[in-house]
Length: 333
Ligand code: ADP
Ligand code: TRP
Image (cartoon, rainbow, N blue to C red; front, side, top):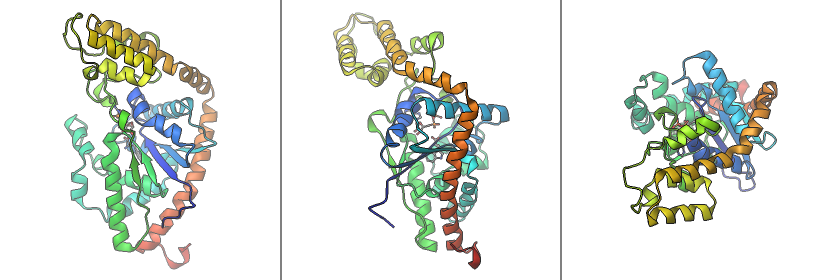
C-alpha cells in the first residue's frame, strides 16, 4: 500500500481536558505547527477522549473552544492543515467498535497511561480502559503515516500498529501502519515540581499565562537548598531545563556558566526564565486575544475541517466494514 508519490500524511490530536501548558507546546504543539508545511496534516481536538476525565458539558465546550483558539494563535493555519473536532467525525466511534472486536484484553491491560491515571485517582471506567482503541481508530481512519506526539503517547501508537496488524491479518490488508514522531529534545518537559509537566499534576506553566499568574508559577518552581554561593549543576535544575527551551543559545550557555561558577541564586535564574517565557509567548497571546473576539470564525474553521476529514474517514471506514463483512454488496465502493 506504500505509494511513494503520495504526500506524507501527518495526524495528531490533543485532548481539550484542561489549559494547555508549555510542556504540551514544546513536546507536541510546536511540532504539529511545523509539520503542517511538510505534508497533509490532520489535527483534531479529542473531545471524545476528554469525556473520560471531564464530566461537565459547559466546561468541555469551553475547553474545546479554548484549545482551538490556542492552536490557531500558535500558528495552526487552516489553509494548510485540516483542523477539526473529533466528535464531528463520528465514524471513528464505529471504527473503534470494529477494532475492539479484534483486540485482546492483554494488549489494553499493558497500557501504562491507563495504570497511571488509575493510580492518580481517576475512576477506572470502561471508556478510560478502551481509550487506546478510540485513539487507534483516530489514527487509522485517516491512513496516517506519522503521528507526532510526546513520549507518553508512543505506547499508544505502538498499540495502534498492533490493532491494525490484528485486523489486517484476520481480514486482509485494510489499514496503513503509522509511525510515531518524537522530538527527542523536548519529549519530557519538567513541571514546576521537577516531575513531567502535566495538567493532572498541578505543576504546569500555561502557554498563555501572563502577568502575576505567570510570575507566581515561575517563582514557585521547586528548588533544592543548595546555598547561593555554591556551584550548581545546570542539567539538574528545572529552571535551566526550562530556560533551554525559551532562551537564546547565548543566554542558555551564560546561565549554565553562572550555575557552575557559584554565587548565583535560584531567584536570579527564575527572573531570567520568567522574562524569556514572557517574551517567547507575547505575540501568541496578542493573536489569541484577537481570535477570541470572533468565536464564530473559529466554529466555521472547525466545521470546514470536519467536512474534509469526514470524507476521508468515510472511505476508510467503508473499507473496514467491507473487509469484515458488515457492509452489504451494494455498499461496496
Ligand atoms: P497532560 O499530561 O498535561 O494531560 P496530554 O496527555 O493531554 O497532556 O498531552 C498532549 C500532548 O502533549 C501529547 O502529545 C503529550 O505527549 C505532550 N506532552 C504532555 N506533557 C508533556 C511534557 N511535560 N513534555 C513533553 N510533551 C508533553
Ligand atoms: N491521547 C492523546 C493525548 O492525550 C490525544 C489523542 C487522541 C491523540 N487521539 C489521538 C494523539 C490520535 C495522536 C493521535 O495526548
